Structure formats: C-alpha cells, structure tokens
Image 1 (tube, one colour):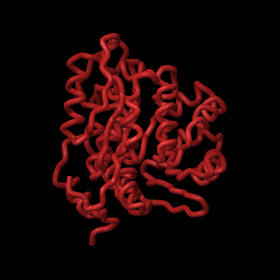
Image 2 (cartoon, rainbow, N blue to C red):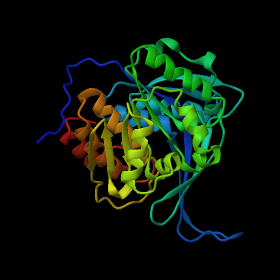
Image 3 (spheres, rainbow, N blue to C red):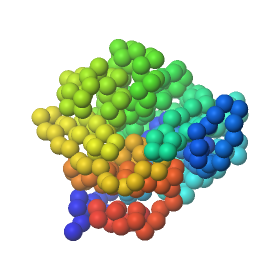
Image 4 (cartoon, one colour):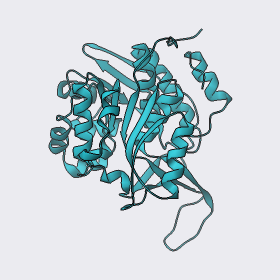
Length: 324
C-alpha cells in the first residue's frame, strides 16, 4: 500500500532553503583519542551544511527545491554547488573571494553520536543586499536554520529572506540548530530573534527544545513551545524515540526506525527536509512524519548526511509514492 502519495501532476512553487553550504570532515576513530596519541579510524570528506542538507532531502522526495547561500570561490565551493545541482537542487549562490567555503569537523563516537566544530566560512557572510529577491518571492516555502541567526552577518539577511517570503504569501520553517549556541546566546535573546520571523514550522530536537523553554520531558517541552509559538506546527525530534508533532489542539507521535546507528550526522536535517518535501505537496502531516522517520533512520545507518541513494532508500520512498 502506498501511503500519503503525492499527485505528480500538481504544479507547486519551489521550496527555498537559506543558509549554510559546507563540507563535512567526518571522523570516527577506532579507539579513544589520547593527547599526543595516534589511532586508526574512518575519515571522509562529504558535502554538508544544515540548510543544504534540508534542500537535498526535500528534493530527494520530489519537492522542487532551491538553495540560497554564500560560497567561497574555491574548489570546495565549486564541488559543493555541483553536488547540489546533481541532486536536482536549483542553485542561488553568491560567490565570494573574501572567505573560503565553510568546513565542519564532525567527531563521531562509537554509538554514532556526533559533535561538531564549525568554521566561520563564506556561509556566515551573507548580506541583505545580496539576496535574490525574485527567487524568494517565487518560492512557496522558505527554510531558515539557526546557524543563519546566531551571528550577524548573516542574521539580517536570513530575517529579511523570511520577511520577504511571508509578505509574498510563502510559509517559513525554522530549525533551532544547536542547543549549545542557544545557551551561549541566552534563551530570551534567542526567542527575541526568532520572534522577528513569522514561523509556520519549527523543528527543534529535544535538547534544543529544552534550551529554548527550560522544560525537561518531551511533553512539557512541546507544550511550552506551543505556548511560545501558538500559530506554528511544532515538530519535536526525539532521536530513537521518534518525533512529537503538534498543530493547534492536535498532536501525535511517530516512532523511530530500528536501524542501527552508525553516524547521526545530518539525521535531523534529513527528517526536516523529508517532512517538508512531503508535507508541502500533500498537506498530510502524519504521512510526512512517517516518511521523515524512515529517511532519518536510513541516514543514521550510513556514513554522512547525504549518503548515495541505494535500493533500501528507494524501497522506503516508494512506499510513500516517491521514486528517488
């Protein structure tokens, strides 16, 4: 049975993901790293960046999608943009000679959990004057990540992009991005910044939700977020416990898959991209969340945020009416 199938004959305006395009240096050591020591492990260079990951996964589930961000005029930037185009993502890239393309060091432990060190590359330098206004106005939806609002620039550019989208009748989604950065900025300051956007979809994980609200258990976090963002669909990602979704007075939970975790890099981005890609076409939140859980499970069982598509991914997508 095909669940939540999308009608391919319906024409839909594209989604646009605004923010970071970078390269991930994925590092998973075989042993504990000792000061001054050496060990073997797996090291891999992989295209990444939270917004770019969301764009790719929305495109992989059939949503017309574009990416807007700033990239260094270097080989890494060229390869990153080429990868997006190969994934079917339209490129609205601003090139710069003043800063290199961003690089993220991802340290992965034996359980698959990851910690990141993010360089402030070209993606942090996007200015309001550089925004392609027509591309934003032509979009049905604009996605923003918190990495575009933690510092200024690119904060004003991201906020302006969200405002242009809202004024053009598009919906807006926001991913809070990093519980550590929220704590460093401060809960109230972070809330103040996000209130400048008209957010229709919010995608925190549990730690980000805790940092934003001060609540602890998932139900309390969800209720607190609903009070803070009463007009917003809240999608609270709970890792191995799936996700809690609430819109107005309606809420439901979807289960995670039983895939063995290898690398959690990009799992939240893939959930977000697959959910938006499905929902913007179907308006079916349950089917979108179930598909997103399947996609995120596939991602964590592989290395990197955008592993090459395979038969198993095709099987999962076909169940929901998508052919990768």
